[in-house]
Length: 117
Length: 110
Image (tube, rainbow over all chains, first blue to last red):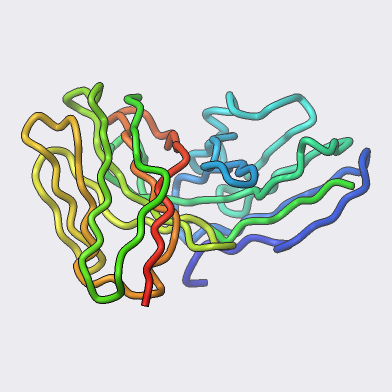
């Protein structure tokens, strides 16, 4: 597709339920990021993949959060035993090159709005 | 990464130039200035970035002061569709994370 695609667009989960959020990056993009955005705040970094390798997961808030990108393209963010504080928009972004080059922009999807009730 | 300071909100009349300031007084020599915007209920959209020279593309211009402690994003002819939250981000050469502040809410008025 032309851009980063995320699904579902909206997800309502009961507290304690497991959820899986999908990201289809732009074809050929090496770098993939997940961000969490609370209402009225800027996005906060969760994790970074370079191809299939998860190089940084320092932003994942707890061990209930898990991300994977097994074939270096589609990525899934999984949240186990969801809690109310997990309610947020989860954004995925991809970039053509390696961002340590310092000059490559990231393209974002529209996000998945997760509401835990 | 250096921290950025932006006004919370700004108004601009449709058709006029919108000038959005950003302070990044602790920026270091190899850190880039990035601008993104986020229209309501959408993902962030890349606008422009620069290191020390002024930059221009089809969306906007970026003016960086000579000491690099501040910058201004210029939307030359603002339209109603430019209403969004604008984020100024400073990112290091070897740091792939984008660290976001609260941004400036720009409202374009008819």
